[in-house]
Image (cartoon, rainbow, N blue to C red):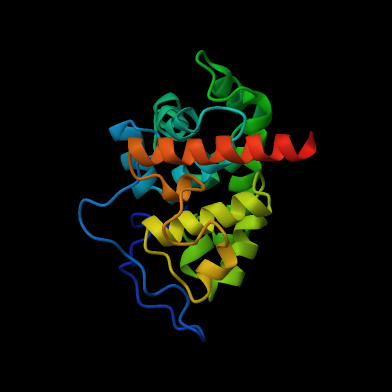
Length: 223
């Protein structure tokens, strides 16, 4: 079984990383700081405290409203009747997990395929990170390595990986050397391009307006 994982972005209570380059030692954030992606207090608390929940929400954040995607890990926990665990999910009966995702209301527009994707991600976390989802970022030496690791997870393309790295850096204190460059343009300061910039309802709406404008510009250029 994986060791107990500290809240996302916090420094583990175990001994510091002794690898060359120091990994992601300079992480952490103040009391009261947390994510606001689902706009549901309990679901957002889980995203902030549970690295696996955050990764699952990110996988599900496609073709459905972001609030629904990031509320899903909390609902999945309720349906499972236990905390999220990469090892448990990796070995879960695929048909049974698909049925859990498909219960009304379904956790995604495509619950079966997303259940398989989440299970594949959990298997990679077990195989590569000893079942500890936080190690995807807490043991990355720099931004390039962090981006490479995230992009290798099932359900993450290059753009989604950049957005996730930006989210870690902007909101959860995961700032290995070069993280802004690796996550560009989503790591840029003062922007409202992605979920990395959502801290409340107002910024969520700003991000949606930006995406709407980008789609309109792309459509006009294509026409």
